Amino acid sequence: MIILVALFLWWMVAFGGFCRYSSFKNVILNGVLSLWMTGALASFLFFFSLIGHVNFMVFQWSLLLLGGGCLAFLWRRHWFSLKEIPLGMGLTALQTRLLMAMLLVFTILFSVGADRWGEWDAWAIWMLHAKFLLFENHFTNLFTNDIFFTHPDYPLMLSSLIAFVWKSLGHSSPVVPLVVAYVTGLSLLLGMAASLFELTYRKLGLAIVFVFTFSNLLFSFSHSQYADTLLSLFIVCSFVFYHHRNTGNAALLPLMAGFFAASAGWVKNEGLLFFGLFSCFYLVYNVKHFRRILLYGVGALLPLVVIFIFKMGYAPANDIVASDADGYVAKLTDVSRYLVVGEYYYKNLLSGSQLLLLLVVGAVFAFRWYREMPLWVGGAMLAGYFGIYILSPYGLDWHLGTSFNRLMHHLTPFLIYSAFVCIGQHTNFETLCVRLDSKQ
Image (tube, rainbow, N blue to C red; front, side, top):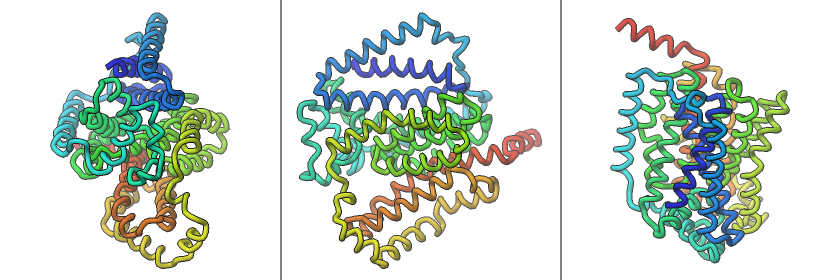
């Protein structure tokens, strides 16, 4: 339990920092962002402790003492003055009750759908990786293609979060990954909603909680205990800082955008594709703001260093990267592969899919969304996934059937969230709702 106390202390430090310097007034938004910044940093430090063969008892007590000392120092300097820290949500009493009711429904549905140890990949990949990380002197036994089924090249954020809590508890409880999955899904919901609340789009914030609670957009993955929802969360957080770029702290927001976007690459390999594309478009959309770009790069530095050390020094080559050059050429010139992937895209994207519905809604309510950065990033990610399928060393039917829905789970939350932001910016949605309420 020592590590949990240490994490709480550091979360308090981060929460105080966000409250004072982010310019966000919503306590939920500050809480979610500070929670996952703390989680990411703890994961990085745990990885460094493993490669440095630091005894775990020393690691967790160091975190605890440093966190306690830092918190005490900041407390004496009135860092946590209740007069300065915003504690509101900007909601009416009725809206607060509606939000709490929907979160209760989310909790019940999650509890009903969750399984012990999650689904197959949760057990075979993320939990198995976590069990290797329990042994600081032998954790490198994970990084071999002799156990290729567990994908030893996958990044370690989710596994490390589970592993250091297990080590602190002294046993591998299935409750830990379940709680992590629940907190991840809840954070995704609250992060999107609180950002909309912060932008004064209160009804849109409640609407996005309703959409994700009463549909299969989130539940098909959140209770599986895969890392896909965690990746979606870090992608959404990156866009939260992007959408608030003109209203929040001019220095902190690009710094955090870089940190969360790069940290997505520490969740899954697909996060590296996201970071590369997000960074390219961030550069284009901020080409006249050199300071913003510089701060974005500084924020991305630590996660990139961790990922570089992991990929270059420990992880075996990815299946696609390990393929020979002749195989690349043969696949790139095989027209049948393009037809198979293209047909699958058509059936699942343009034939009554949720993404098609989202595009229609965007065209009707917020046409300017088509010029916004999130849609271009989403389109580029789909194109990147298309190229990965072309080069895939696996059978296309199997690879598409087992992974495409996960890739859509990476895209759907941030696209819906960004569409809602655009609707709030370019329509009178909130005013219309008020008028309808008054007529009733």
